[in-house]
Length: 486
Image 1 (cartoon, one colour):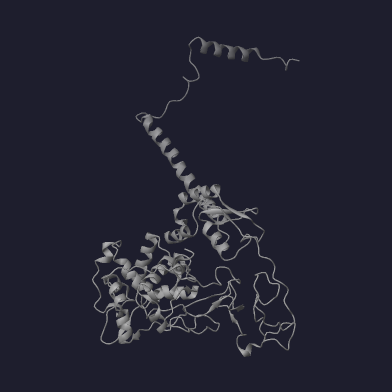
Image 2 (image 1 turned 90 degrees about the horizontal axis):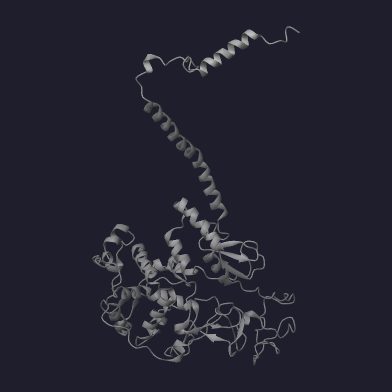
């Protein structure tokens, strides 16, 4: 019992110490030990400065730790924002419905142009393609954080020519399934044309129908016997056609016929000034064409100057073709000099017809011949176009090379940049070396200079004078077949 009682002596001492502190006696702070004499002269600013420096170092440490994280985040975003067609960072994104896969707008347009009838990624049934603003916003944020991921300027220009930002498009419905193959058909015999059947869908029947091998093998037409009477093979789809059918057209330059029903828009010889050059849909096709460089003797400097001009002026390959064709029509002999150069021989793999009247007017042209015409005249077209005065002075002030278009140093970039090699052709003696005739065609033949006789030179003299800028394009014929379909 005695051990549990509190000690009165300890209690009294504690109360006495408390009363002393309250009455102004010595407190606990007064009993604290003072700083050493060596620290008495220092001010508080030093410690504050150190404290601020310590705080200032903390963001640097955070940045060094966060930088790899942000780089990894940007890389992950770039991977997720890749186009399903070109596998690059999506440009002008569009979304395919209903699967919600996204692509570059230009990639989707090219997919549809090449016959795509479904989603390029999942091949699912799709109907409409719409631009995506949320995706574009995310791409813009990523490019602001890392501008190095932006597409090249030339790629963006080409894409903008194919697809206009903000436009929706529809994916065409799939074509009907092809009919079951005829197992009784012999590859050595000609198959009937679409108009040979009595109940065909075109409302016109061949007066000389071809017998199907599966129906009557004895009367079928063998391929070794040539074309059946009243028939030929289409220059595009290479199927048999009826020469007198309403849908059949004939190119007046290569003398090849086209069925008009196999591939719409391609199995066709269109009016001269309304045709589209083959494989030259837009400026991107012209840039990727190796034949264009052959037309300029592989002078890449002059070709790049022309391509930059075409981009700035928004000039399409079809526009160049139409101006070249119009220029040829304005000459007294029209297309006859080109035909005499055999420019349109063996363009197609099928047998061509016979040109019964070489002096007849040329009303229709096929896509392949249109490309040949454009490549044949693109260099002289560029000579005329330069005289409009839209080029920069750094280009026009270059002195002409003494060797002209025959210069062997045109592939030397330094020499090509210093001297101009785009010079109008000139006559020499009894023959002329036509720069246009030396152009490489779509068949990839090596460029050669074609010698033209004195008679042909005199016939071409007005055209050459115009190429040198001494004349303007004369009035064109106003025949309806030249402008039909424009």
